[in-house]
Image (cartoon, rainbow, N blue to C red; front, side):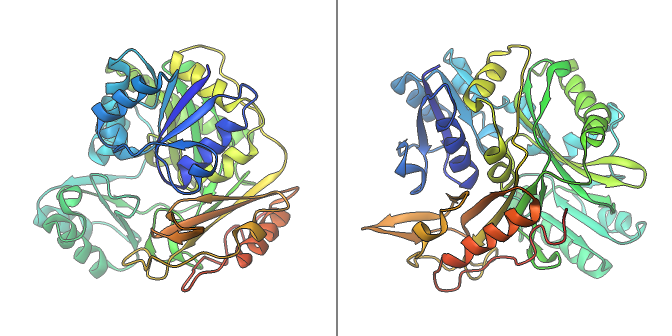
Length: 422
């Protein structure tokens, strides 16, 4: 393998490009459309990443050996299908497998049929039965869009009135448009959360878990405020030793992959299991069908093998997948614009990037663009600061020291990522 195209342009995609370029197999890496950070080391192509035919044509024009389809909407739209239809390898499931993330109702029904542990739920497109189901639950209340909402379509609240307001807002289309006109209501679960990224090659028995991570979804310290796409993460996770990973694989991931196969779905790519480690054992919160964001930004820096070879072998359906990780921990902090996630302010010049990216620190770009010689904010989550250290505590200290070096008006980040862990 000598040429790889990464589809997307966020912080996750920057981490994937970074990891591929550090692989011993040293492929040439392209991105579509990429971002200002990716453009420092890879050729970025101005192609709509959600247009299956445009991405497939670009893969042909570049004569790549592999296309890594990195984001949920691309996969749901069938970008991997279009690439495979041209006879090229794709890392990422076809649209049939991407329904795991594209429809939470479909995912829940599949889990129920496979006896995979998850929260009790109801799926609704009418207000009256949805409110009635809510009334039957105890707090915390969980209301989710059935469709994709960029990681923001989940409300977890202790207040019944807030949950009822969310139901009305979702079903009316006011909150998330069509994505919320069908919704899922779940009984709340309690316990530590766990993100487990699993590389899949189409054979359920040969799926390979990567190093566990834990992320922080809410905007505010102490897990307060609205859900975001993710404000930080750390890896490894002390509450998830190898025995817990094996339990998650046995109870959740393998039965899910087997259920997909029984439906004729050849799943190749990443299956991202969001788990709750409850007192009754691990239960699925939901599945994503791609690398997590920001989990990729703290798991990939710990990867010690050949990432390009791993994803190529998985896309090819080869058996014997392998993954190795350094002992060092990694802590990742998202730096966001003022007003994120509701109305982020953009267009500000970013200072201090060179001062931050030292001492085992890598800065991944998400919402940036170039104006002359400057990087400028262009999205809600702007940068991810990832730091390695011999312990979670030392990695955390490095990450926060680096984050302090980066400045723009209204810059915001949580101060409690990985606090008190390890």
